[in-house]
Image (cartoon, rainbow, N blue to C red; front, side, top):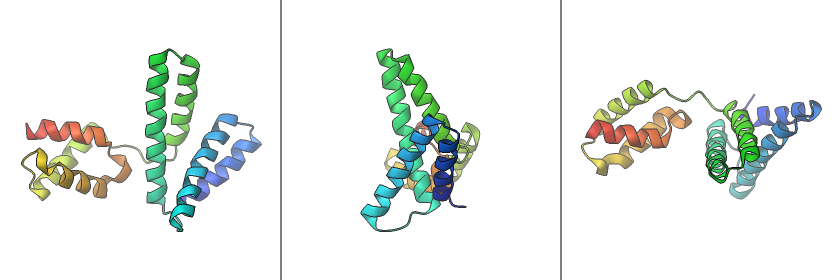
Length: 147
């Protein structure tokens, strides 16, 4: 079962279970998937759906930070619930040690010697690790390794 089909099936399950938060979160994800399919006139692969999920997760985390800053604990809890739901559909992220090892390997392959090579390294990391690698961590570790 593809990721897209899994989300659709889970929407139905959430409706049956009267789980409003899960239902609404998955409907938002499904709408984002359909929007891209209509705009680009193509069926999305699991990799494309993972990219949408990653983007949605990042938006939820940014919103959570803003709500926390504003002292809106009720909305922070709502965002936490949505984040937990979205994470169920994404692969387990790489640990810091795994990410550093992969980054060192890629730096050697690409021959990166300065910050100017960051684009090459990021492209290679994304092709190898996909959504399992957090871009901000890659950036941070890249700077650490080169300095």
